Every structure is written in C-alpha cells, then in structure tokens.
Image 1 (cartoon, helix red, strand yellow):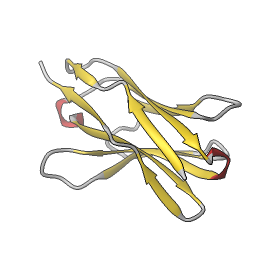
Image 2 (cartoon, one colour):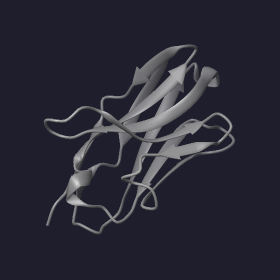
Image 3 (spheres, rainbow, N blue to C red):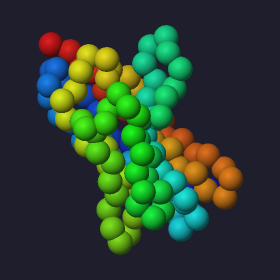
Image 4 (cartoon, rainbow, N blue to C red):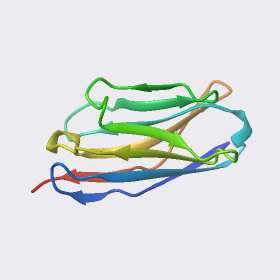
Length: 116
C-alpha cells in the first residue's frame, strides 16, 4: 500500500505561482510512476504531469512551459508540482497519484483557486 498526502494549494492571482507537494509513504520502493491530476468543477479528472521512476516526465499540453514536476532525490518520497503563470482555467482540485504493481493510489487532493 502507498499513502499520499498533498499540500500547497491555495488562492493565487492570475500570473502567480504555487508549488504543490505530495508526500508518499508505505511501500514506496515499488512505485513506478507518480503524477498530478486535476478535476475542475463539472469536468472529468485529467492528467497534468507525470514522472517515472527513471525521471522521465510528461505534461498535458495545457500546462507545458508553465508547470514543472520533480521529486526529491535520492529518497524519492516527495513529488512536487511547480506551477507558474497560473490562469483561471487552472482552478481545480489537484490530486497526487502513484502507480505501483498494477495498482493506482490517490491522495485526497488540494484545492487551487486562481482568481483576481
């Protein structure tokens, strides 16, 4: 089992920045991929950014050049999402995800609101 706890959400003005953190615990050595997803009101959950065990990253087109995913090394127990140039359409609940041995684990989410 893997437990995930997100932090760092909040209210920010358009153009501002936030850094989200996701702390993983449990059987973390078995994690293959970690990532951030988001769900805006009335919309489906979507992938924002992922990072593999080997450090390969992938981003949604809507956040490329603005968001950056990273993790602490060598412990690899925390994944970060640096969000710059935030837009109102980035408003959503952001969820951390970990994939391990064919299973998918989720955090409870952290709310990001981009508004003037």
